Structures are given as structure tokens and as C-alpha cells.
Amino acid sequence: MTASDNPKELFPVMDESGNVIGKATRGECHNGSRLIHPVVHLHLFNSQGELYLQRRPLWKEIQPGKWDTAVGGHVDYGETIEEALRREVREEIGLEEFTPEKICHYLYDSDREREMVYVYRATYDGEVHPSEETDGGRFWRIEELRASLGKGVLTPNFELEAQQVGLI
Image 1 (cartoon, rainbow, N blue to C red):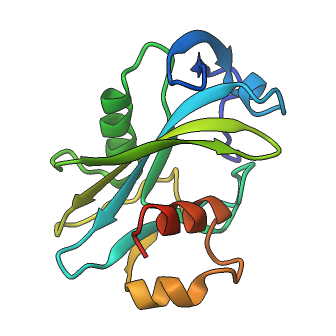
Image 2: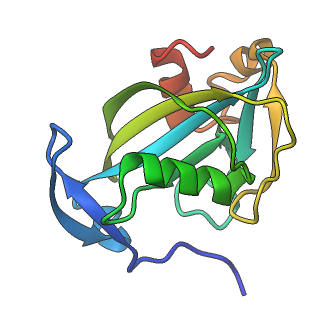
């Protein structure tokens, strides 16, 4: 059986100010409806300044096989941003103990969806345990990331965000 995202999973729907105004399914949020729904991103650095990226599984509907933010996931309906961040970090890379620092939040707008993205960073030198939700991951030197920009290796969203918030 091939893994996939649950199209019936419930997400909060937000206005452009980040206020929850309703709920909708994953399928409804990703079908071109342009409903704003929140997601969390964690950029994980080690003390050498390298940035951990995950490889998106080939079964993902958006950007399969590309390298992306260490942790990225949707906020479930009824969950706080911080709860979602901790859950996604635990699920995707197996970390329980980390200290997130909020960088910013912004509205990501593509032709397929609109997301309110809450961006965090953390420094961690322990073992990372990528789950089956990813196709693994590794730490990248910043020079290596810069050399990969615009070559189809990294997700466009990661490239844009990393440059906007000054990560690379």
C-alpha cells in the first residue's frame, strides 16, 4: 500500500490576519479553493551552522522528491501553533527536546493554495530520526544550499522562505 495524505483531515481556516474563522478538510484546502490554513516550519541547525533538510516522499502531492524544510506540517483543527510544531517535529524527525525560536509568520500564496506559515528555528546537535513521512534527511552546508538554488533540487517554497528570512 502506498502512503498518502488523508484528504478528510480537518484544518482551521484563517483570515489574512491569522484569526481562525472556520474549518475545512485537507482536500478542500488543497483543491484550489484558496482557503487560508496554517502550517508550521522548523529550520533545524547544528552548532556548525549546517541546516537539516528532509527529502519529500515521492507519494506527496506537492513537490515530491525535492529537499525541503526540516519539518513542515499542517496545524490540525483545534490545535495551537505550538502544539502543532511539537507534534510535527516529533512525527517527522523524532525530537522531543528542542527550544524553538519564532522567526516570523507570513502568507504563502500559490496557484493551488494559501497557507499562513509560522516559521521557527532551533539548534540541535543530537541524532535526528527521520520518519516514514519523509524520504530521509541530512545536514547541508550553507554553501551547498546556495549552490543548489534554482536547480530544481530544493522546493521553491523552501528557497523563497530561506532567502526571505535570511537563512541562506
